[in-house]
Length: 220
Image (cartoon, rainbow, N blue to C red):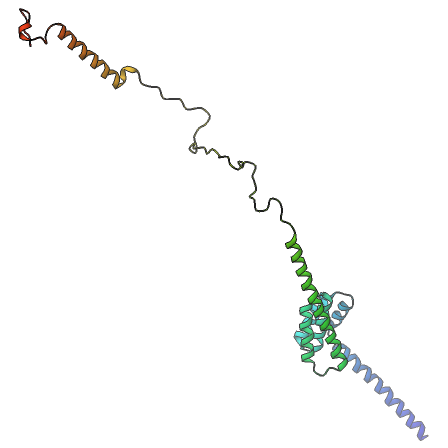
């Protein structure tokens, strides 16, 4: 009788404890941020940029070092060596209570990213060397010749026609003045007249001496 009562009490207490424990687990699940679940799903499906953004938001709000590890893993999968190394080192510094196995794992991530960083730098150096070793084009350093450019060594005639001038007809040359309107013509005429007058006077004996002057004439 006593045993039966004790068994009944134990069953009742157990029945009451089980729902309480389940309620506690449900309460813990309800406090899980939906963004954390989204970040896990994005990381698992290979959507690392999305997962990185969510983990960065969560770390900014909660400052839990585990998010730094997750951020480093996102950068690691994206091939961003510098960012991954920084996140992993911050994680080791802000989570000093890590086990030896966890610390060795993160150290391995850091070494992997350092090797990737060295390889990326070597690839960049090789690309620059290959670009520098390529021969220059044949016309390198020569100015391009336009469709109306004159060949080298030949001068180009420059038009001096004023802007707005009418080029439809050629200019008419100015007519020269007649001969009788020129000064040299009248100079020659004057000289000829003077010579004729002097010749006539000489022939008439005007310039003879008084002893040779004919009768009836007044000689100079």
